[in-house]
Length: 274
Image (cartoon, rainbow, N blue to C red; front, side):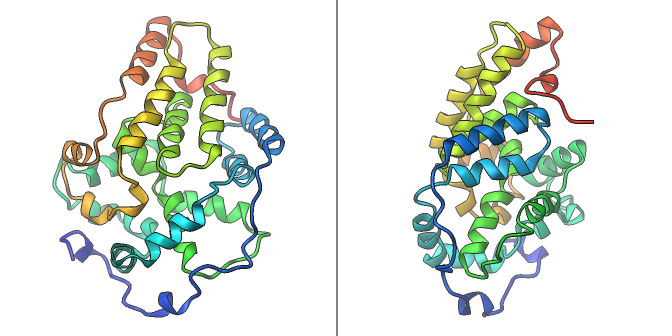
């Protein structure tokens, strides 16, 4: 067990292995592009309405999700990570423990980002729980993998340098598509990019930034299947080198163009509802 993992209580119970690998009652989701478009339009009315994002993902599912999840859960590495990291939010929201990590580490960068944005890992869990309140609860091993897919989102912001502005979110989704190939990632990413282009007429390389993010995600190992507790104490630059994450040049160029025009990138892609 690594040094950081020792700060957290590992899950030594055998309850997890007693659960079915995959609950066959889980619905087989189908591609529903019209429904996805409807929910994207709703998202434009309030870009902070995460429920609409969840509904888009429900409409445009990752076809091989079950295959990927089962393979990882049954692997030796997957079981080891499951024991050490039963719940990422519990680890990521313990900022007191994370702040004991070396300065300049991913742990400190993560805390800085989350505190500056007023976010918590549990907050995203709570938003999903509200969305899924009227849905069945499938108590299987696969649920742990599904939770990790959700819980690494904000970590990707930190690792890539993409902000929470509209283009930054679109780029994170394009990056994630190469890691978790749900069509929803690209749908939201590129639709957001096109909408940003309508919001402000400029030479900002919006679509190039999104395409670049897709390529950066392809070069990076699948984050959800890596040990987060091993990465957190490492220096941020070292983690980026390890994961082949290089600077997002077109994203930075877009911000530079908007900055010269006095455009606030956080004002793009719709407005937050009152």
